[in-house]
Amino acid sequence: MKTIFLDEVDSTNNYLKAHCNELSDQTAVTALRQVAGKGRLGHLWEGCEEMLPLSILFKNPPEPENLSARAGLAVCEALEEALEKPLEKAVSKQFSAGIKWPNDIILENHKVCGILCESVRVGACLNVICGIGINIAQSENYFKQAGLPNGGSILSITGLSIDRNELFERVAERVIFRCAMPFHECFDEYKKRVLNIGREVRLIKNGAEKIAFAEDVSEQGFLICRDENSVFEVNSGEVSVRGKEGYI
Image (cartoon, rainbow, N blue to C red; front, top):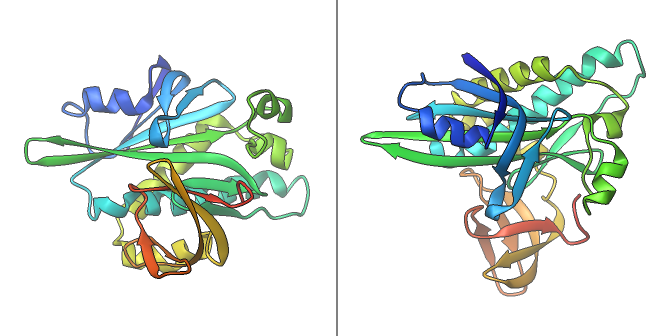
């Protein structure tokens, strides 16, 4: 794994897009400040020193269609590992991270991370850039002022300080490890993390909403839902999924 540390960038995803030809597979980049990042569905995401924006370049990865799911599992595992060390000297509570399908990472009922994977084809090579944004040290007031009552940072939720660079390397290494594995080898662990299963969800597509019940996750990583008419699969590229009462 090659790592790149930048002072400022428009977005770490854009940096890898612009330099993918000269960079090696599994290059990971982060920046102290990200001024034009984005999340799913075009949402803006700017990063400062209290956040951790990072992106990883995968060249011709196996099963690119569910790379985001494997990355979500990896981020959950990396966050829990990162929190174990300070807990030894602080409190005895163990924190568990989960996935609000398709790509939000939840800690103690608050979103601490989002994932955005983008594909870029260069000739015969399909590059997938996995962008990850983690809230590390913003205060509760930061999220209130931003109108994000369900958002949180590692510090505001757990009271624990995490070294930014160590977390970058830990997350990148874990994502690379999981994304090199076939999805079926990750599936059981991934499914355990999906918080939507067994809950009512609101599906949003082309401005229209409907309520459904999330029953399961398919072996391809799709959310299996049921409404009054049928059972159907939801692809993350087709709809936005939220817990009916907001973030889980």
